[in-house]
Image 1 (cartoon, rainbow, N blue to C red):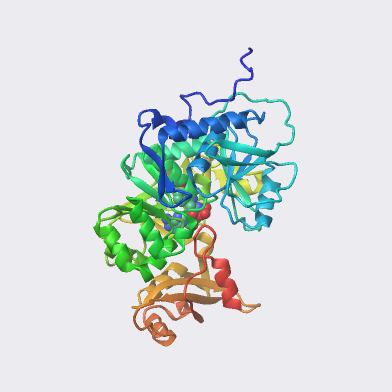
Image 2 (cartoon, rainbow, N blue to C red):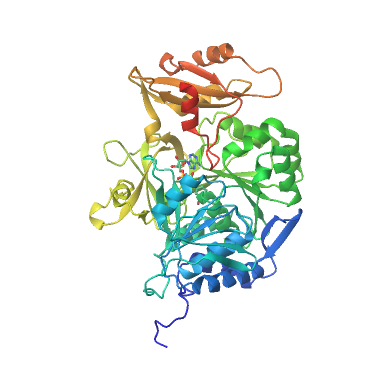
Length: 533
Ligand code: HFR
């Protein structure tokens, strides 16, 4: 047959491809656990690297028989599981960009993603309950035996591409765009593999580790957990969603599964800190949990200290970065945090990336302590926003240090300064620098002051411009569940004693818990609605 014969597209073994990189080690450790997951009938089941490879290849063969071309999108709706991994690795094998979404996404949101991505195929897990996927998208379900087609994808044109190259798209993650229309972050195989290779150099994981993954599949944190665990030959332990919502059950699952590292957004720890401190401490004592990796938002220092006190032997890793570059830095924080630390270090850029801080004047900021906007040069930059070159141009900008080169860097919208230790310190979003009565206010500073008051367990500050009058500072505070909770007057008096008048909020809202986004971050939009209700 001609070299363009019917053999399935494949990435050459020596070039970057997500499947090749993650299953590379499989043949050296075929019997080691790749995924340890809740079994349907209760208890746990283990899928070895050998079994995961077999399921991946079975799925790839079935998908290849559909005649899809490199670049045809496949939406995968599922919790993280061995079968979901086999399906997304099969897509990676064939160069089919996967669009991961977690179950429970509202129909409207899923249909908006489908309208944007125009996928050839939509696949859900065997027990998935989704119906009504719009034509002409093909539909099916996947299980241990591979995918079972329900509706064939619309007839495709002739196959154009027979090779999967590193610049082809591995996945597209749709995040909430500021315009309300979801933005598709397009990530290439080269981007994701070079990032995973970079963080592997950090030495934070060994093949003996069991990594608990808690992020929903549409969050690249989940893709990180998969990549981080598999690229080390470790075991991924997806935490079932119904375990996440109850701290006692969550901690019990971690213990039952022998988890050694827990990957989660900071907000996920709040209920366990509040309601199950002893069970948390027991998990630390047993020495099983020796790593806590967090990302997605700044871990409030007060809450981080409380967690460190319960897990004195664990290492705490702060992973920072926007989905447009997977992440920028992976940093081990001291345990315990120094008492005077009010801001967490986000360390230095991962191998293969470099951060430049740019001031509002467009020049590189110099000297430690000066705040600038994080720009990052890296092989892990995303390819662009799906079908949106205009918005892409606002994020991928000419390298300010070398504009003639044609090379682009990511303008993150995040602010940081370089500390005397040479590490980056996060100063919030550029758009979270607010002016109150002409004074520049850093919301993080207000939050730290509130969280320092005994009995206050969390604080979120924001500016709301009610109607047309001047912007007003609002703070939402959660308080301890055990023992007498401080009242608004005491808290405000404490804050007034420590902050300039313009930083004392007009409105203090005492809430039981912070509303969270589907990705587990504090939901600012929901809080704003609360404030104006
Ligand atoms: C993010 C980005 C997480 C885990 C992130 C693994 C990988 C990648 C990620 C997740 C994320 N301290 N502020 C922090 N890509 Br691989 O959150 N992506 S995002 O695009 O949804 O949001 C923004 O969240 C950043 O620009 C920051 O503003 C904020 N952020 N991590 C941290 C953080 C403080 N560690």
